[in-house]
Structures are given as structure tokens and as C-alpha cells.
Image 1 (cartoon, rainbow, N blue to C red):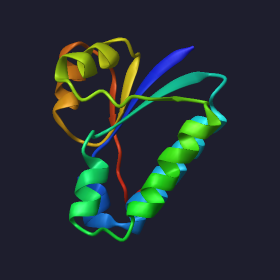
Image 2: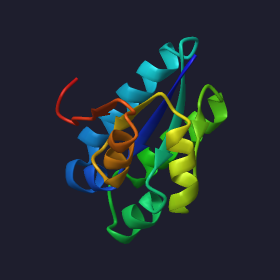
Image 3: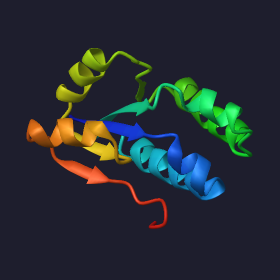
Image 4: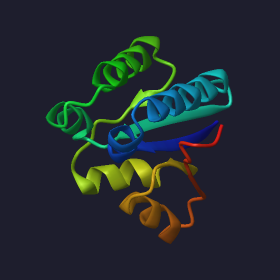
Length: 123
């Protein structure tokens, strides 16, 4: 079984609101449907909830509901690691990176982990 490191940053939620939530729903559904073939390790930026609340984002509740559902359904792993060394250990244990742009993209690329960048505006 392949392990996919799925990274979501807070910025798309702040900039694109509901479009970012819908993209997250689609991505999670895709991973859920492939749960027999891939193990997804979802690593949301560790301060996402904090920044959504700080910016009074209209999608905070939707985001938290998706996180809660992901945890409840137990078909993937939610990685809440916040220390960079620990995050890298998780990333380096994976076969591929899928997610938003950030420093982890470069870490994956440096270690020859295949990278696919999310695009909120594409289905």
C-alpha cells in the first residue's frame, strides 16, 4: 500500500473560502474511495484553526466538521505534528506528496518523493 502525505495550508481557506472547502471535500472523498490502495496521512498546517478563527473566516465550522469526520471515519491518519523535525520524519516515510505549496514541497523534492500540487480551481 502506498502512503500519501496530504498537506493543506491555511491560505487557500482564507483566500478562496468555500471553493477551498469544496476542494478539500473532493480530495478527501477521492482518498476515501482509494483507501484500499493508498494510506493518506493528512497534515493540515498546525495553526489552521487558529488563523481561521483569528480572521473570522466563514469556513471555520465547515473546515472543523471535515476534520472531525476524517477522524471519526478512521480511513486515514490525521498528523497534527507541529515540530519540523517530526513533520519531516512523517513526510520522508511516505511514497508521495500531494498538497498545497509550502516548504514541505521542497523537502519532498530534495528526497526524490514525487510531488503533486493541489489546485483549488481544478476538479
